[in-house]
Length: 266
Image (cartoon, rainbow, N blue to C red; front, side):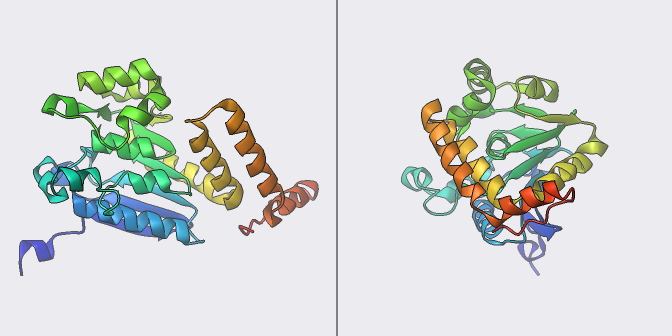
């Protein structure tokens, strides 16, 4: 039997209590991401969106050294030539595009290095929780290129133009405290507190009505690239849609009856 046949899957995927867990599983390679793993990102994100029993996606990295150090530089040729690399999302080989399209909420559980494409994975999630020993950066510029899946366009919206320019143009690595200070990381915790904190947030999200959660997420995302007036119009449309659902009626009824609501996603 060959080594390839016995090698552990590079993406681990499980579902439990409404929460999907995706683990980048190449700890010896700092969970560097290959083109084949990009295909798994696409498959899993589609499944998460289409399965009614899944409410939240949690992404983490195996081992205790890295969330992900980004794309596997030694395997970049697997993406093909310049034209194939440009159109990698159309070939279902880009691992950021499916995360950005995901309707359901996602949480990045970060421990260790979160660099390059790994930073983009975390950036593409809705909420980021990190350990105090984690470190962050976009070092691509030091190798002769820059990110191709969102760092230059989305990171400034998350942490501001000046902070993003410093991260991207210097290629420096920044400690978790700095990532927390600029707002990239929402919660900063000790190592032993990482998954309990992440699962506490995931459980809270999973108990909320799915239509309202997904509508709110969509509007938050879309509003980042438009005017306040357009964002308010989308928000009003989303609000009107939510108020027409059985879940909204159940929420009102449960409030008046002083009990916990039972949402059914209708």
